[in-house]
Image 1 (tube, each protein chain N blue to C red):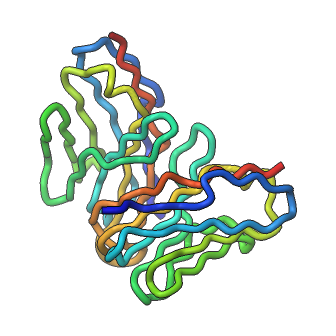
Image 2 (image 1 turned 60 degrees about the horizontal axis):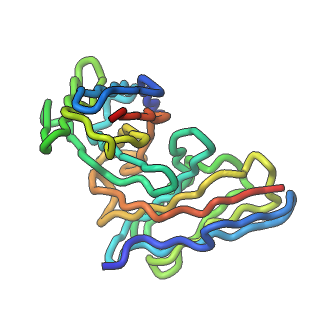
Length: 115
Length: 114
């Protein structure tokens, strides 16, 4: 089955710096890669996603890149702000074939942005 | 509109007891997922339902875990003969349909087995 590895487990940056979180996946059939942000005591919320037919996607200060050949994808946050502090989870799933839709998550990255 | 809701928000139970956790998905969402989040860990897939199709139970950790979805809407996750290792936050999510559609998560049920 699919396995998703996420690094680093913790990340501390100064406000205004960039943050990068990296994930690798094992199942080449995976074709949907969402990123979720979970603030302390709250539910995970989708912040950005990418499908395997594109290599990069941006939404304001957030971008995600995907390398299908290497089976890895990354989250980039620029101009970090204290409110970006949270745990970020990457995930992978297949939109076709067996086990459609269920997300396999990485173990999360705790991002701390110091003012 | 209303988001995904779950009840109870917290549940403390004694080892060996059965528990039922409830999930109300977003109206119109045909796919419903259950995940488990242990302290400091990622989210572990348990089971999902798509419409009236047979559920995908491939993530259930043991036969003590089961889930139902009645009428294509509300779902109940049942854990029989609870063990201390079952202590976790159980999250439910729903999406418009299975596949690459955004999954909206509920607030979770924090289960503590003493």
